[in-house]
Length: 344
Image 1 (cartoon, one colour):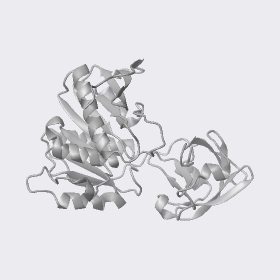
Image 2 (cartoon, rainbow, N blue to C red):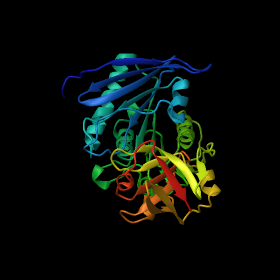
Image 3 (cartoon, rainbow, N blue to C red):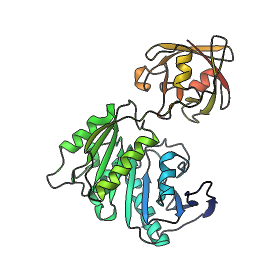
């Protein structure tokens, strides 16, 4: 293996904004071609969470970024957890590369900051498969794993013998794969907990749900009893309406256009939808620059065929408007910050 190297180091600090918040320093760099980001709180409680990310399209940029202001990560940082993230050295199918790069990040953190008392893994989708393998084959290095909607594939050759605690967090239509894995475990495996979020989609969980699961995992890894099977659904409080009600509908801003898929994130809330009489399972009309399209208000992309319009409220409680496997932004000709009119 090549000698470890650390090419780029940028240090930033975030000054605490309220009593009880930790100062957090961000360290960015590169290990064996993989980008890394380490969030170091002061003081550090000697606990470490390493992130193993999901599949990313091959032609997208390598990045290790995560949102330190999200409820999940901010809570852990304020409690003194260090959080480390890595891209893999390539995007696309990168299961083997991800295993190596997560391991390199762990070794780098130990060498640079000292050995943590406990190291946990958070793995999502393909990163969930990586986390399963770490729990099976590298259990001495980790205390436990939160695994969200893992890509469980027979060809990955799982040993079916995790030796440390796992808490699987599944969307309801993805739960069967985890149940199949758990049913086939070897007799002396450590039994995983399995919590099911009663929401459709893939990785469609919110920060509160993830935080509740992670807290339970840490207790399980510490020898405490937890609910081994549980249904979970934490509905975000309806955010204040920013819509302008006029012209027989509601005007809402596009907060983000996905750079690859052209999906539209908006400020539109369930309360806004109720205010103009939209109903789940029925279509509404989206209008921009004299273009108008019928959109189904559903629960996930799977509700419509390829190219058809779909909208659903995301885990953050705000409306996403999209076309299944096609670009909504390209057809509407819109961009970040543009205003859409939604009518019944």
